[in-house]
Length: 272
Image (cartoon, rainbow, N blue to C red):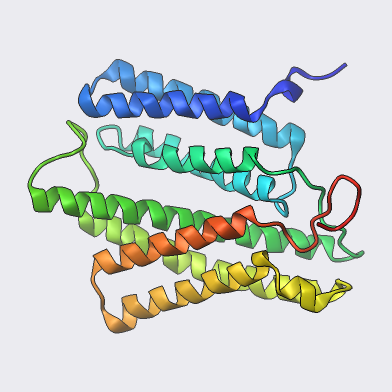
């Protein structure tokens, strides 16, 4: 007998997140407690359905679907926590669109099976995936902080609030949030990248595996983050330029997430 949880689909949590986002947008014009509670309820419902989907279907993080949904889940937790902790600030209105975008991208991807690791390499493969997942979360948080920074900077420059009665974090806190995200993401990305290169040695086509979109994109993302760190600590560039650089890194990050792992296999058991 099948479990009811097996019927949970992308539409279940995607639509829940969409309703929660609509409530947050409505709060920009009509700040009210009922709208806030309704948005929190739908956000929590989406997170619950999202969690059930990952538990029952457990898509491999090596696939675009698995990696996109994994990052989306962490950001959904981040959104719900931020909405509770920062009740009077525009928080979920920035985070939920990213969650919805990741869920939408994952829906368009073809499910694939886990990589066929050699004996003794499964644990290292899991660590590789965990490091890159955590780095991906750092990239996403840095992107969100950068977008909020640019919106807040424009709001202060124009001396008006485009967010109705909802407040935002200060520029200093948003810049610190971006800095911490980049500082955390870079070493995690470096460790995951190095471990991934080591694991690539068991592939039959090493050169072919190295020159895939996934690997080259990750290398490019690592280089962009290295430049961001240099600009922040050595060149002393403005917060606006760093925010724009982080947004560029996030665009590259989406390309990496949406690309297939060199060792991911399709339904027929053949490498993709």
